[in-house]
Image (tube, rainbow, N blue to C red; front, side, top):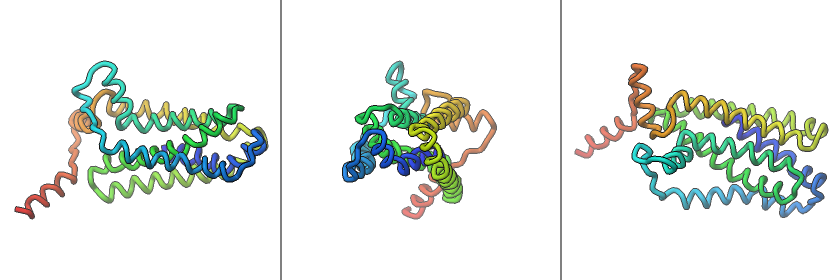
Length: 226
């Protein structure tokens, strides 16, 4: 997901100005820059609004509500964002200026939420172990770097071949990532349960010992207070 996210965004960073100027005759550098940052700012506002919203327990929901909250909860929330990358890239490939601008703005929002989602899952799977968390983060940053490297090397050759080719490629990569990661999570934790519950059941089924150091730290603090 880190690879896909940064590859798509780096392709858009490197080509959006020339793409809009040559394909849509839109040459306003000021407004293009505003659109480039508007999505990031919108994400910050949305995060502030959503952080205090209550999260229902999936194990207590049924029907459409369970499907909705299961889709927009971790781990599947991350693949929703990856699907968003496929849609945004496809939107840039469509010859409509309004749709192209909307896709450009949404890319900033999707980027921020994708990176937050990746960090949240790394934090969850580290089980409070700072070393494990840093190892997961390093792997993600390596994937980020590879994605940006490929974007830098492929963007302009593909653009010269066909102006929409970079976005078609990124849309395809995002869609492939969406499929692979969705199947991976389905095989690992299933669907319709809280991720903590699903991982605990998986650990018991495989005979694994799943120890969270968050609890250990909390217990140590409580003992010190006493």
